[in-house]
Image (cartoon, rainbow, N blue to C red; front, side):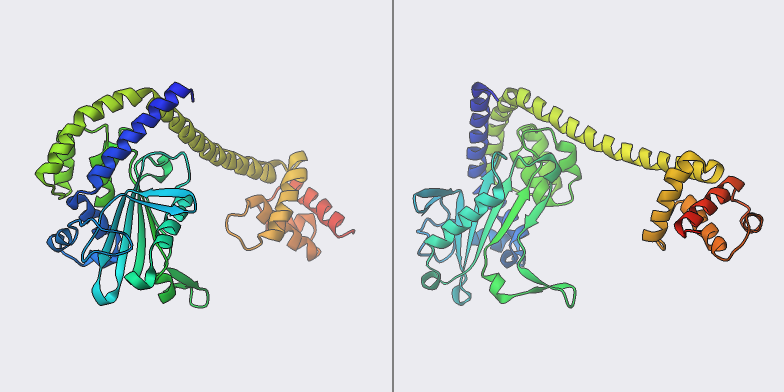
Length: 370
């Protein structure tokens, strides 16, 4: 990528990040995210959760009575992490719950590695006993995931696999470990409206719609209403203001998006071509093998068909889908072992040709050194 193009793309990503971080702090958006992903909030009704999410500025080491929200700088040695949106929920005697929500608009680095760094930074700066931290959630909203990951939510495991009973068992110790959740939206830079409308998860559909730079405000409003997502006038105004910016960004990013689209098409075509080619190759090979094994059984039948038939018979004696040639060879070998003549075998197996029996006998005698 040329420096000018790289700088332009980075500027677009910076705008997307800044705009997303502003919108993500809206109470309606937060209640959807936390109510969908965090067990502690799933049982709350919408009004109770929104009241609980009223932000209070506070220091990360001393939790507020309800919730704090800020962009917090944390350090690990000389390395600095700036958290996009940090919440600390005081649950009284039950302890405190810390939630960090991060926005991601580029796949220049692995989110999983960055997640480890952020979890470490939060834990290093938090005094567990003093503030009674009970749980840490780090939620990543990925706005530009690879095409194959779009619409997928990934959650770190909080259970141990019990091989004896073949199931996952929750462990109290693992409850204290950070929970990492990666929410892969539909790429907000690209036209994904059809995929968004057919998406089953409201969380994915709503966030993909809100942050999209290719869907105009009126269409966004219709999609969100159809999903039952309600928002206040402040957010409505922000979405209207976004429309002109989004159109400018979309037009500016078209060359980059065209290159990405060509890459996606190439990758999809390659994958489909590979699958189709393998399927056709297997089918053609099966037909050729059967035809040569049944009708000819000459050069390729003996060198390839009979050899492969023996290998298949030995390795996959009871497996389904064996070639008919291998099955016939096994039957002929069985009759040869009984000492039957060629004429007796042809009478017992009417589908077998004279040439097939002849070369099967030669192979059998060679194998048994007769």
